[in-house]
Structure formats: C-alpha cells, structure tokens
Image (cartoon, rainbow, N blue to C red; front, side, top):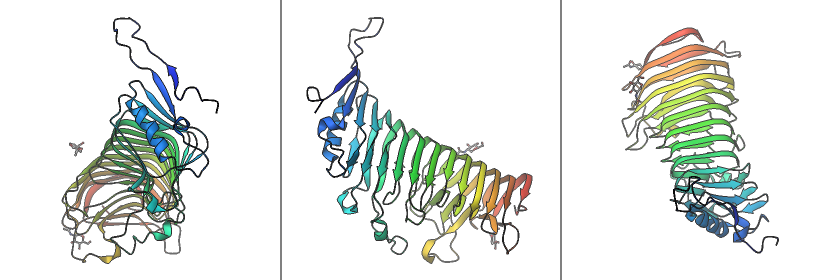
Length: 400
Ligand SMILES: *[C@@H]1O[C@H](CO)[C@@H](O)[C@H](O)[C@H]1NC(C)=O
Ligand SMILES: *[C@@H]1O[C@H](CO)[C@@H](O)[C@H](O)[C@H]1NC(C)=O
C-alpha cells in the first residue's frame, strides 16, 4: 500500500555523457518490482502473468533494467522470459519461487525459461523450489524409453554474456539448470539439492554451448552433478562440491544422429563425496553419430568414497538394448587425468573401457592415488582399447 503513487522506482538517471558532447539522453537504471505488477508472495496466487509483464517492461527499458522479486514465497506457473532486450537486464530473486506440484500445470519442458537474452544476470540469494517430491514417482524413465520428461527447474537458451549467481535450486521434477546454445556464461555460488534417491534430478546440464565457467557451486542430487552433452566446447569447471549423485559426466554421447563433438573441457580443484562416479565419459554402443571427444583435463580432484572415481565407458547401453558386438564410433582422445586421489568404494578405481572400433588415444594418467578398502583386496585398474602414457606415481598400478 505504501507504493501507490508510483509503480516504478527510478534509481539513477544519466542525462548525458560527462563531457556533454552527446546530446542524446540515455535512460538510467530502473527497478521493476513484481509487486507493482500485482504479484503476491502468499505462496498461492499464480504470479506468472505479473512476472511476465514485469519482464516485458524491463526488457523494453532502454537503460539497464532490474526485475525485482522481494522476500516472500511466490507461486509461479511455467514462464518464459524472452528477449532480445534493449540493454543489460538483471533478474533479482530475494524470496522463494514455488513451482506447481502438478507437472501438467507447466505447459513447457522447463518451469522457468530465459531465451534470446544477452547481458543477463540472475541473482539475489533466493530459491527455486521445483516441488518435485510428488512428481518423482511418476518418473518411469528407467523402464520406459519413451517416458514423458517432467519439467526442469530453469533453462537458459540462446543466452550470451550472462551469469547466474547466488541462487539455490531445490527438488526439481527432473534436471535443475539446463543450458542450450549458450555462450560466455558464468555459473557461480549456486547451490543445488535434491534427495539422493530422486530420479533424473541432474544438477547442471549443458549442450551446444561454448565458453562457460562453473565454479564455487555445491551440487547434491539423485543424478549427475554436471552432465556435459553434445556440442559443448570450452567449459571450465572448478571449485565444485559434488555429492551425493552420479558425478560429473560427459555424455552420454552417440545415441542420436547429428551429435557434435565435445572438446576443451576442464574439471579441476573439486571434491566428490559419496557419488557413484567421479569423472566419467560415456558413449553409446553402437552409436548413431561419429564424432570426437577431445582435449579434456581432469585435475586436482579429491574422491571421498566414490564408486568409480575415473571411468570411461564406451559400452554404455542401459536396459541391455544393444548387442555385445556393437561398438561406439565416438573417438576419445587427448584426455588427462592428473592428481586425483582419495577412496574408491569399487575395487576397480580406474576403469578405461574404450571402443574396439575407435580406441582411446593419448590418455594420460599422472599422479593417481586411489585407495580401496574392502575384503576384495586393494584397488585395481582396468583398460580396454586405450593407448597413452603415465607420469609420476600411479596407484592402483596403471594398465595403459
Ligand atoms: C586439442 O589440442 C591440440 C593440442 O593442444 C590442438 O592442436 C587441437 O587443435 C585441439 N583440438 C580441438 C578440437 O580444439
Ligand atoms: C579391444 O579390447 C577387447 C577387450 O579387451 C579385446 O578383445 C580387443 O582385441 C581389443 N581390440 C583392439 C583393436 O585392440
């Protein structure tokens, strides 16, 4: 009620350049508070229309714009925030955004979508609550290959020069953060949580994207902490705490035609705790596309009670759909595993199962110290169709 006079707050107005040379007045910074568009933080009212209207005005503002969601619980149906926008735009979430419990109430593949935007910042310390608990039991994807995907929490599509920081994502119905055709994007100080037994709740999924950075994030879910998919290049991942979950995975690749190569990926200075895998590359056997996975560095990684700390699996084929004689066509080359230590719950701590038709090339193992404590004896390494070299002390003893 306090803010009845003006619906928008003008923070700053830059009349002209300091030199006065330019006569054209540029628009200043403006805050677009969703409450001014009728949004209610009561946890019940659907705020999709209010949020969309706030976004549209902010996106059309000639100066730098900020959509503001204050503290409170804002129930929100499926929304798409589309650009292009006139200028830089921030989406500041202080409170909690609450997804519909019913997946059918979200009429798109992702609950919250940002699309065709440059210079976007999503931040504010708030929470995206996907309310997945009741939807998880509808997930039959392990049994049904044509299962209907449930909505993910948030997607960025065709977004460039942008970032997400200081946001929590919890209990998505399927994956949490999804990136497609994104360039020059930073993900930092993001926390992602879903129970260990929640199905397909990947933390971050990335496809067809370039020049991304992920750092200082916490991810503990029921599936991959980070999944790196077809066409992703130049991705730097560091200072990640991963677990529980399935680790950081490249792939699966090779299942579909027209998949693109993946190269220039580093995963470094991170800790995996209680995950089923550490760092993994998996490709389908057989594969529908022939491409390359190359120039990877996995470096300075601690494994605490991890199932398969180092794993290349080119015979990936869930539900035994493939024949034993089919082999992956995806070529893996120039992959470095450097300074990786800790404990493996599986006896086979290093597993490099490459393709018979496209053997792995230039694989380096350097400074590996993985321990297995079990009645089945010390940790071992397994190699198939892999060539490369080792440097420094390697334990378990290398099979390359
Ligand atoms: C991979 O690295 C090698 C050597 O550093 C370089 O020559 C090659 O162009 C890189 N490949 C890709 C696809 O970037
Ligand atoms: C690939 O590995 C399998 C299993 O170890 C082996 O039988 C086969 O001979 C290898 N193929 C090549 C081309 O090295």
